[in-house]
Amino acid sequence: MGYIYIIGIFVFSAYAQVVGKWRINDLGWSLAEGGLWSKAWSYLGLLFDPVMLTCVASTTAASFCWNMAVSKMNLTTVLPFSASIPVFVFFLGIFALGETFTPGKLIGLLLAIAGVIVAIKF
Image (cartoon, rainbow, N blue to C red):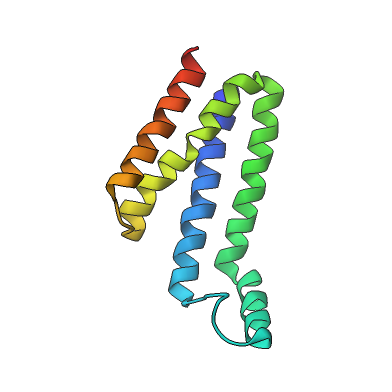
């Protein structure tokens, strides 16, 4: 049953990260633009955006899945799987958001994968 929760961590975390990034891009939102009041209103608007609220709910669900997974399994088992979420999100960013794929990112990705494999196997 613990692995079901790990899948939930993956799905909910990936959703929150990718959809949140997509929505921020879609709105053309940037904290670096405008004056203080403009930034404050933009941030409040972003906080109450319905799509962004689903990202908050998804992050909450991922946290619930994390707590359930570590209650059913060893932390040393759950953590390497959770550490591989950025690898999954990396590919989603490339395919779903059209982000760039560079040699440096490839090296980082391979190191992350190697770290997860070492943590799981040894």
